[in-house]
Length: 317
Image (tube, rainbow, N blue to C red; front, side, top):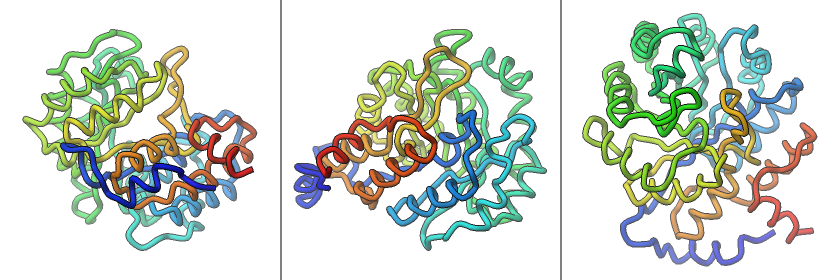
């Protein structure tokens, strides 16, 4: 299996002027991707997937979610998964922690980073967790404080930063307000997420410019879904704006239960092919990720959602 012209571009390191020379990819497939699966995925499969991704070279893997099994049964084995994975030095393993009970579980599982979450849309917040944005973030105050005291990295994730399935457009001021609140909670990194995939390149540029006034852009991450086929274009726009952290999901795992037709996160293989073709360093082995995507797609019996992954597998056959 080869990466074709992207290998040559990476070797030359001929970055497009104005774009970051290096990008961090946060791999979210084991958590954000698999939690959308209705059929239970075995602990063995989850462990092997994370181990494969660790070997591929990711420095940040979203590996578990310590939420109530009543709400997300797929993530009920988070502690077992974390106990069995082969941890790679230099890799941060993250978990979603909605409350103090979740944080305690994350600490026991020796997570490196905890993730708190909110929404830029009041309608989404009310429909999703039955409270206002302000109330939802206030609940995270003790979690954030305890996480920082324990020496953990704290990441904030903001749903519906580019549009909402219930209210439509989301104002820039609403995104800035949540970014500011998460900054004040002590977040080391903040994700602006296009939960339903309605964002466009111009909107990404505008949102990035707006939030850069209240939080360092180098600690902002782009999290894009590909519902309208715009994820790669949005990532390119994010690069132009100065964003150098992006989320993606191996084999395009995942989806959004809140919007009809909303597809999953952008596929990691497609993002890597784009970045390597631009001569941008990621530290991640595309071939290893393609193999991991093939593994998990076969394991859960679903088509591989990564176009670059499918093409590279076909070329290697």
